[in-house]
Length: 120
View 1 (tube, one colour):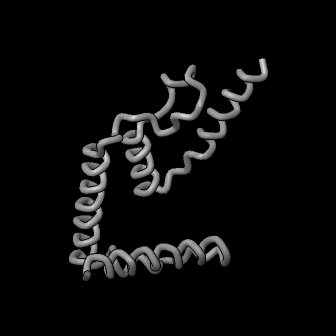
View 2: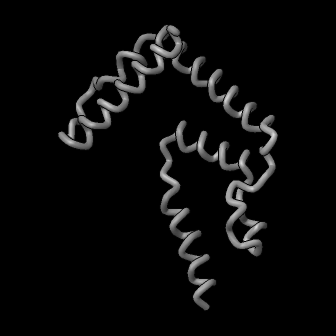
View 3: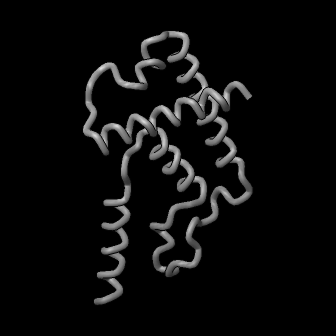
């Protein structure tokens, strides 16, 4: 329960920080998340929990009965070589969640290439 509360607090702090930056262009330091990064105990707890839960999520995805099935089986069979498996989709989702990296431009590129091929 304490771990969930800790994660919830960090998540809310990050969302609040993001809102300050986006809506009010607040860029001053120290920012809200410094409460967790400046104290070695809080920071270590955060990193340890991220590592624990990410590892658990990864192993659950790899051990799932449908790990190696295609994530999007309804797409054209000719695309089977480029469709991700369920486990690959989970790993990519973990990457996005941990880094905040936006994959949507790549997805749009992929889907627009596929649409272009269908049109020709």
